[in-house]
Image 1 (tube, rainbow, N blue to C red):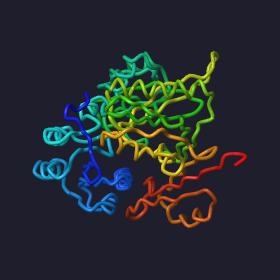
Image 2: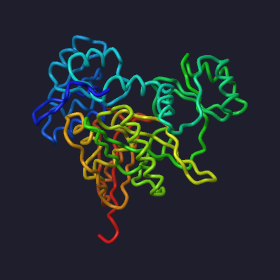
Image 3: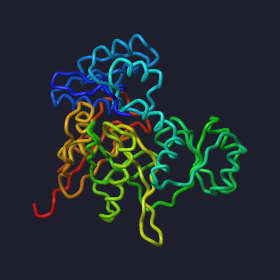
Image 4: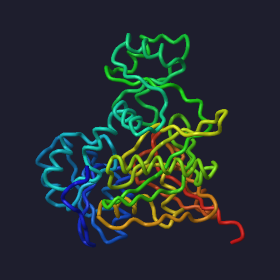
Length: 368
């Protein structure tokens, strides 16, 4: 799927970023350190990424004229979120290379298509079924069993667009509450821990993976990530291999995250793929201060046609803690913590569940 228009940027060239949130902000900051300019396109006038770029476009993704003008100002286009409208991606792709390739979004924007793709690669996932009605939901439950997780096939993040179904629940009510005609039912996975792998792939096929990260969620929102995950070396290698296999099968250019479950069973732990995020990812924020090259710089290198870096972790353990909602008001307490670095995203007023910033902590290697 790689764009046939070969991209090879040089310092001073411009990258267009779709989306103006914290991920776009950190991508632009990583690009600036490499001498590359960025222009951000976002419909939100309060986008925090606008604060760190010289040029920005504030317009709706349906505004074809604005998209065309944006494309004319940049050399390559990327995105900070996976739900880029397909029509907007087509308009842009006709004028400039879009990396990762927009066709990848057809797989990763649809949970059923994504599960089918991973399964075809021979990689394990939770049992799943397509659901389009109450009757098909009942049939899926009969095959998969309960508890199970019902998710919309498109959109949804941080626990939105999904519901856990347990024995005794009103199936019709659960289906109605999801307000969709297109869903997927997934078997509930009794996992030991949640992990993710941040992988980067260059246009030449070079793949570099960061240390496997363990993730803790609270109220369906990522709260803490730790690298490296406390799992056996062989299991970590398997997880990195899975991420690399997925990136290569997609002919991916840029950074992606593969979220996985670690299961403990009679034959030893194994991993199942949960979701693919075709972008830089919250669980990779520890790399900003905890690795020789961050996930954001890796993504910029990849889409610029530059060689990827070899990630080397700083310290024995690196921890990333999200500052969610009002927690941002206590940022000062982190400023004097040894080994801690505070990142504040420059968003507006705190709201419950809103990621306002994060803190990375690097624990020095023993004996040093």
